[in-house]
Length: 173
Image: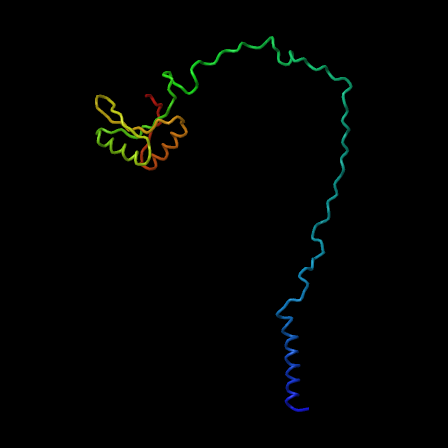
């Protein structure tokens, strides 16, 4: 044989041997679907059985009460008529409402400015002139609201936005 052919054959054997050594290192030929069948659970505890007595039906069943006995029609009380004024309405027949007193000012211009700020925030604001201890005050209100919970929610929002402490009052038209 020629030396070139020998070198090629030896080189092929060396490459084959290297492939057999490196190939198992690169690939894991273990079965990936292999399941460990050894149980790691403790044995089941022994449970004592309990004997339960069988329920017995009573021999005599009492008579069923009549409808009159159940509802006791003879002892019923007189039905009174409900109030004539509809619920949620005041003496004038208007819905009960809630209003927020947001501020009280000595100057009408200050009250008007605050009313405008509230209206810009989409609140139904207005002011009223009030006499307090001989001096004129201008009180700023928001509302009216039919539900007190809505008035309380508006109070929290207004107090937070304008740094005030609004008062929830009954609305009197």
